[in-house]
Length: 276
Length: 209
Image (cartoon, rainbow over all chains, first blue to last red):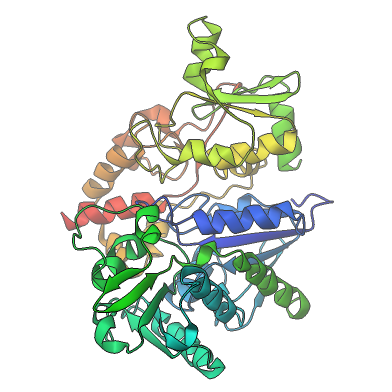
């Protein structure tokens, strides 16, 4: 069924959403960028909540070799259970790329999620600098926000790992993690931090209601949780003067141009080590 | 035959309609528009210039993102593609990409169906696989499934795809045409080989009522 001159496909998997048009955007943007570079014969996306779905996507590519990279921040329920199941793969540890021979003979490399990659620290720091270029890092508290929840979600673990890595670099006066659904809570930022400048970066792929609305409300930047705010409104207002500090709030990481490099790296690592 | 060659052959042998989009080869490439706008132009009631012009395949995503009321369209085969645009593309590759953005996976599923490779999954199998918040759908009653079929999949307000996975009992929930894979020669069929996440989510809501 494969076309003779189509060899390698990349499929970037995003969560997608049935209510938020911005959820899929970072995944689309990475696919556009990688397609433009003509590194792969085919570049496709797939989503859990949108189309093409994980159940459709393998019908859309014709390459003999397929690289699947989850555009997710953490290993967990989606990367270890939902994506492999929907693609018809055996259960995956996702710590390393695994290679499966599909029933039609094609080779599928299932790669670790982008959030696992060493360069994500660079992405976080890039975003923090971009949000608050005038804030001296030594006088700044950097708050990395994870979701934090019960259902096999390692986002808290992923955020903590980044805190440890950035702390070791000694760039910021203070680095800490805060969560939406478990302590330490984002809403306690004023007591959790001590520096005059506070930079808050969500450790999420996509800007959604969490970053447009939930976190700004938890930070006290926005009083009204009623109507959803647009992305521009929220991110344009940096810095806010609250509790005697300057508070800067960044957008999710998936829109950073470095993410496309991370996706390519994850696929390259699979190509180097995964082909039996 | 590969997807690109199959779709090119279709377009150049009279293929014109993909979902609510009309496609036609023109002198310098291809032109896409909403099929109702294309009909209105053919009837002399509308001019091409009156339609907003897009020239990059990625802009098909912009067209497909919101409906006329600026509501998000998570399901691209929902019959609410907005009107008022035209997409002019130079190459066959750009056309292919634009169709992929307007109707994701449609070409691949069509080729697979033609070649007898498209495997449809019965609803029982799809629901049996669900976990987490969707695990409850395994307990769906036939009545709840029928109600979801009627609300989610009907071609008037739900979805334009042809359902390939329904049992004879489930087929009673919608008009017979909804389950017939054949389509007019100038229309690319839109296949639904298994119930989508939107269906499963709606079924969950139906159960939770």
